[in-house]
Length: 182
Image 1 (tube, one colour):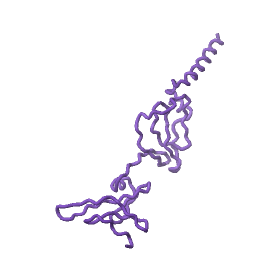
Image 2: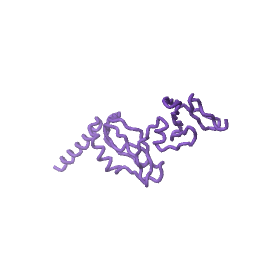
Image 3: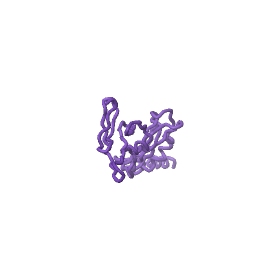
Image 4: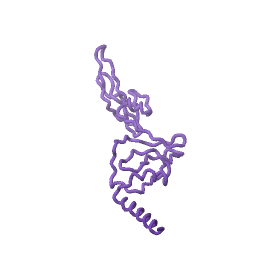
C-alpha cells in the first residue's frame, strides 16, 4: 500500500512538471515567487540602488515597481514565450527616498511651462529659459503688446550663443535677442 502511495505521489509530481512544459501552471508563479524570492526588496541607500523591475509573474507583463537592483523575482513555472502587455505603462523612474525605493512617473516636458512645472531650474535671462533633466532647453514665450488691441506671440525657437547660453525671439518683429556680449 505504501509503495502505491509513493508511486501515485511521484506520478503527480512528474505530471505537474510535464504539464508545466505546456504553460498551464503560470498562475502558481506569484505565490511561489513570494515564497522563494520574498516580498520585493525596496531598501536603498542611494538612487543608484533602485531600479524598475517586474515584480509579478504572469501572462500580462506588469509595469514593474521600484525595487533594489539586486532583488530577483522567481518564476519557476513557464509562462508563454512572449509577454502580453495588457496595459500601457507610463515612463517610470526610481529614486531612493528615506531608505526605500520609490516609483515615480516621468513628467512629459514639451514647453517652457511644463519644464518649470517638472521642477527644473529656470535661468534668469530674457526671455527666461528652462533646461530639462535630459538637457533640452525651453524658452519662455513672451507676448508683447504692439498696441492696445493687438498682441503677437513669438515662436519658441532658441539661438545658441557662443558662450553656451541661448536666447529666444522677442520684440514686435520676433527677432532673436542679442547674445550676451553682443
